Amino acid sequence: MAPSSSMAACCSAAVIVFVATPLNGLVHPMSKSTHLIHRRSNHIHRLNLFKGIAPNVDDEINREIADAEMSPFDKLKEELDKGGSLKDAFAAYQTRKKETKGDYENKLALLTNFRSYSNRELLDSDHYTDEPTLDDLNQAVPSKGKTIWASSLYRIGVFVGAFFLFPFVCQLLSTFVEIKSDEFDIVNEQFTPGIGILYGTFVALTLDILYERQNKVQENASVEASLLSQVTQNVLNLFRDQPQIAREASQIIADQVRIIVYRPRGAEMLNIMRADPYARLLSLIDHYQRDNTKFTPQQEAVIDGLRGEIPALMEARAKRLSDEASSLPPTHFLVLLVLTALSLIGFTAAALTITDDAGEPSFESRMRLVQ
Image 1 (cartoon, rainbow, N blue to C red):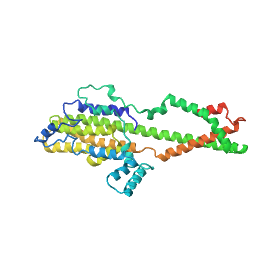
Image 2: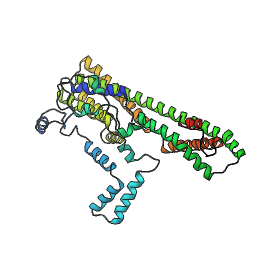
Image 3: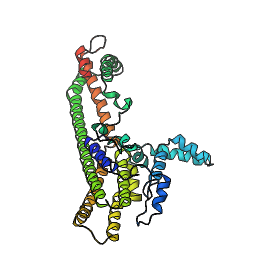
C-alpha cells in the first residue's frame, strides 16, 4: 500500500493526543500488579489492559499471519510433525500451493500485504514526554529490492543492455523468420501501428485506474484519520473524570491506529468480525449514559458529537477497505505484458527492412528502441 502523508500526519496526531495524556497504559500493556489493582476496583467498567482491552484478537491475528507466511514445504513439514500420514502432508502441500497462485483474493493475500501508512516506530515506543516533530512523519525506508528499478544505475543498465542486445535479436529473428518485402509492408503499415495504438491506450487506462485508486485511498484514509483524532479528543473530554473508562477507550483507539498504520487488511477485517473497535466505543458511551443520570450541557453536546462521528468513522473505514481491495487483477498486467511483447516484436520486424548486409540494424533504430 502506498504511503499517504495526510494519513501519516492525522494518525500521528491521533496517537499524540492520547499518548500525551497522564493516562498510563494506553499504548503498551500495563504491568501485572497494576492490572490486578484495577480488577479489584469497584468501578462498573473493568479493565483488561494486560494484553489489551478484552475482547482482543491480537493473538489470533498473529497466529493467522504466521500461518499465512508458511510455504508449501512448511505446511508439509508441519503436517508430518503432527503425526499425519504422507497423504495428508502432500494434500496440505497441494492446498497451500494452490492458495499461493491464482487470480483471486484469499486469506494469504489478505494477511501478507502489509500497509505502510505511517511511521511504525512512533507506535512501538513510548513518546510520553517527547514533543511532536516532523520527524514523527518519516516513512520507513524501503528495501533496495523495491526501489532499485528507480535508480540511475538500473536505468543506465537497461539503456546500455537494450542498445547492444538489439542487433543480436535482429540477427536471430532474421535467421528464423523469412518475410517477403510485401509482407514487411503489411507489418510496418498495419500491424505495428495498430499494436502501438492499442498498447498506448491500455497503458493510459492502467495509469488512470491506478492514480484514481490511489487518490481515493488517500482521501478516505485521511478522512478516517481526522475523524479518529477528533473522536480521541472528545472521548478524553467526556471521560475526564472517569480515568478508567478514558483509559479503556484510549486503548481501543490505540489498537485501531496500530491496525490502520501497519497491519494487513486481513487483520483489520478479522478484528472487525471479532471485536469491532468502533462498535466497542459506542458501547462504552451507551454504558456511560446508562450508569449516569445527570449530564452537563457540554457532556450532552460531546455525546451527541461522538454518536455522529463514530458512524462516520465506520463509513470512512468501509470506503477505505473497499478502495484497498480494488486493485487491478493479475490478468490485467498479463495483457499489458503481452501487448508489450507484441509491440517489441512489431518494432523489431520493422527494423529488419533497414538492416545492413551483416543483418545489424542502423544506429537510429537502436536509439529509437532504447527510447
